[in-house]
Amino acid sequence: MELFIEGISKAWSLIVSLDAEVLAVTLLSLKISCSATFASLLIGIPVGVFLALADFPGRRLVISMVNTGMGLPPVVVGLFVTLFLWRNGPLGFLEILYTPSAMVLAQAVIATPIVTGITVASIQNLPANLKLQIQALGATRVQTVCILVREARLPLLAAVMAGFGGVISEVGASIMVGGNIKGQTRVLTTATVMETGKGNFDVAIALSLILLVLAFSVNYLLTVIQQRERPR
Amino acid sequence: MSEAAPLLEIRNLAVARGGSPVLRIPSFVLHRNETVALIGPNGTGKSSFLMALAGLLPLESGEIFFRQQAIVPGFASTEYRRKIAMAFQEPLLFDTTVFDNVAVGLKLRHLGSREINDRVKCCLDRFRIAHLADRSARKLSGGEAQRTSLARAFATCPEIILLDEPFVALDPPARQALSDDLERVLRESGTTAILTTHDQMDALRLADRMVVMQQGKIVQSGTPSSVHTRPANEFVATFVGMENIFTGTVTGADNGLFSVSVAGRTMAIMGDGVPHETVVICIRPEHVAISLTNPDATTSTRNIFPCTVSKIIQLGLYTKVYLDCGFPLVVSITNQSLENLELLTGSRVFASFKATSVHVFRKG
Image (cartoon, rainbow over all chains, first blue to last red; front, side, top):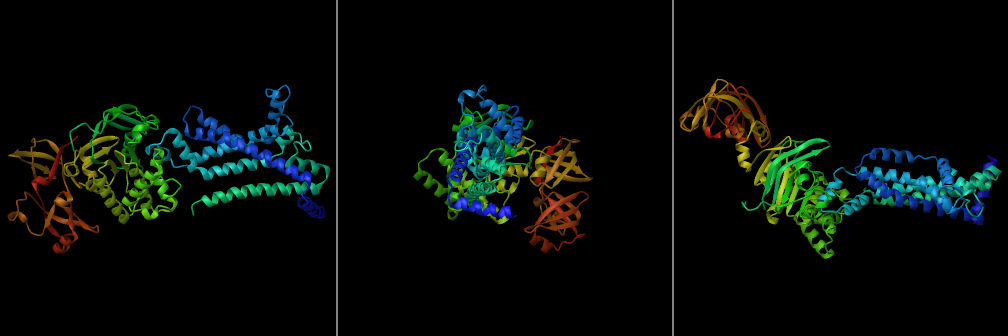
C-alpha cells in the first residue's frame, strides 16, 4: 500500500512538472493512435456501408469475418505486421519496421474491423424502409448513401470511440512492431510495461494515469457530442 | 377522367420479394388527376404495389410505362423517381428539424435555397405544421410526424403521389383532421394520387376510383359506390362491409325480377337469374329497414320477413341489430330509430329491403 501511495505522489510530481520524457511519450501515443483511428475510419466506414447495403454472394461470411476481426488479439496483429515488414517480407521494401509508421499500420489493422463492424451494425439498424424512402424522394445512389450515413451518425461516433479506445490501450502490437525505442517508438503502454519490469512503479503509475485520463478525455468529448445530438 | 393516354400504365407486372411472389397484375392504368384508393386486408401486396409503381422494386416480369415510356426500376430511374413521390406507412423522418425534413427532396434536386424556402413554407402551411418548422422530427406526435412525411412528399410537386396507409397509426381525432387536410391538399394541388388503406371509409371519401386487392391481385376496380354496392365476389363483399351474404338457389325468373330461395325463404331480386342456378346474394346492413308492423300495405318493398331480434350492439354513432328471420340478418339503424322502435332482444319485428338493394354474383 505504501508503495502504491508513494508511487502516486511521485507520479503526480512527474505530471505537474511536465517531465520532458513523459510528455514526449504521451504526445507520440496520441499521434500514433489518432492517425491509426483516422486511417481505420477512412477504410472502415466505406467498407462497412458497402457491406451493410450491397447484396452479393458471401456477404454474410465477410460480415462474420469482420465481426471476428473486432476481437483480433493485438499480439497476433503485431506478429503478422512484423512478418510483413521484415526485411525479406512482402512489405520489407518500405523499411518502416520499428518506426511510428509501423505502429500506425498495426494499430489501424486492429481498429479497422472494429470501425467496419460497428458501421455495418449502425447502417443495418436504421429502419428497413429508410433506404427506399430516400430513393422515393428522388435520391441518386450517392445521395442515398450520404443520407444513410448521416442518419447513422450517432452510432458511428461509437465506432470512433471503440476504435480509438482499442488502439490507445493496446501494447502487444506496438511493442512488437515499434520496439519501444526511447525517443522514437516509445508510447504510454510500452513504456508502462518497461518501467513496471524495471521496478520503477512511480513512473509506471504516472504513465498509466495519463493513459487513463487520455482515454477518458477522448471518450468524454465524443460522448458529449453524441448526447447533445441525441433526442431527449 | 379522360380517355386520353394514361399517365401510368402497367402490363403483366409480376413482383417477388424474398423469393415469394407478392404481386401479379396483368394490367392497371392511372389517368391524370385521378385519386385511386387501393384497398384490401393487410399483407395483400398494397405496399409492394406502391413501391413497384415508385420504381423501387425489381420486377420479375412486365413493364411500367410513365407517359408511354418504359421505366427501369432502381437507381437507373432517378429521372422518373423525381416525378413521383411516395410516403411510406411509417413516417420515416430524418433526424433533423421538420423544415429540413420537408426540404430533403428539394435539396436532392439541387434547387436554390430561396425556392426551397418558399416551397417548404408553403407545404408546411398546407399541412398546418408551420409552427413546428424548427422542432426536431424526433419530438413530434404521431399525427405531426405523419403530416411532416406528407408535406415532404408533396414539397417536390410530384406528378403522381403514392401514399401508403397515411392514417393508419393515428388516433380518431388526428385521423379525421389529417384526412380533411389531405382531401383539401389533393383537391387544391390536383395531384394524381394513389393511396392504400384498409379502411373503406377513407377510400369512399378521398377516391374517384377504388381498387380492391386480394393476395397480390386486383379483384375489382371501379367507382367507390359501385364497389361498395356491387362487389365482384364474396371476398370484396366481406371487405366492403356487406355483412349479409347468403348462398341460395334461383327458383324462378320473370320480367326483370327473379326469386332466390335462401334457407327456405324466398327473396325477390332485380335482374336476370337462371332457374336452378346457385348464386351468392349480398345485402348491405344499412339497406334493410326494421318496422314493428308489417309494411306490406304501405311500401313497394318486395322482401318482407317476420323476425326476432337476437342481439343488439350499440356502436356509438349507430346500432347493429342481429335478426333471426329463418336466416341471420344484420341491420344497421340509427340510435334514434332504436329508441323509437323500443327494440329489445326477443322483440318480434319485420325486416324489409327492396329488390334493387340485393346484389348477386355467381358462385365460384
